[in-house]
Length: 371
Image (cartoon, rainbow, N blue to C red; front, side):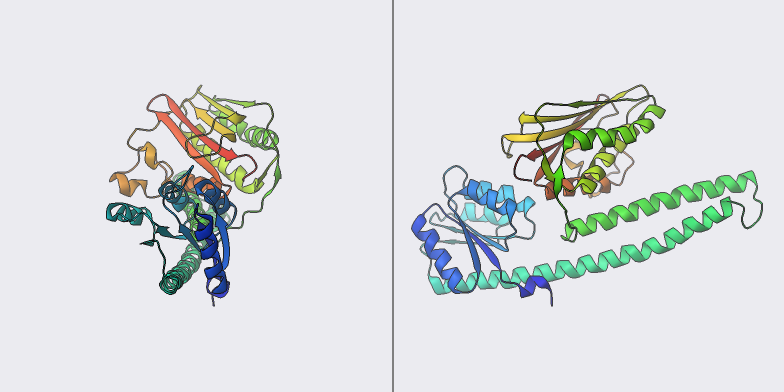
């Protein structure tokens, strides 16, 4: 049986009324659940970013950050968490909006304990079933992609064998055909690897091993390794490291994957004799919805840029479907979708600014002390 069905569910009760919050914790704890509490929206967001919950019971009207803001913030960050709104403020229009935002249920105070427990258990049963389906989907998708990758690897090996003329001499025309075949096989292999990575991230199967990392060392190191590729296209790659960059907890291999992917795109879409500027800075420069104290890693190029229509979908693997037309950038989009997953797995935020013909800036923000 799945682990998600075996373990004790963990719940978070969010309410600014001390008495109601304590009552809900007592009722739920007596039913055998593990229960944490938060006294306001900001406290809830902090706790949900540091721990995974099966269900969050969320008050609507609270100081500092209300329930709707919490739902908007946490729904995309906590895809495996369900939300139930428990509030003394009953309004059909607001209830409909909350359900559209991802809340599973909405009911008003005062709460009748027996009915409350029944609905919580019903939500948790549905939640466990959904998680099991997701696990089965992940297992099937991963197995299928690995099975597809096997023949591609064999094909690449066979083409390399022929190119080395191990099976006999080949003509120059044949060699060109084999080179084209090899390039196509390499692209297909890279695509399958991206799909495997993205599938694992989407279904929570990737282990993030966080270690103390000095970004003022890691970022220049990655740039040094990729600089010869930029130089081959006469592109200047500049790195600026600000003062006071703290040591933070990252998975260094995954962070290098993000940097390599974004830098690879920057080189690919920057004209010869253009420039790419990489900066790492610490301070009060966070985007809306993040903590004030952050470390930002920005990669700015002078490349072709991205249209206003495509920019909001830059990190979406379905952008071609959503726009109804192929992207002007000849990529699958999976690499950037993986980057977004990795950054968010470190409780970070990935943003993009761009203008056609003038270049693109992609920035990662990480809250100090929270990643």
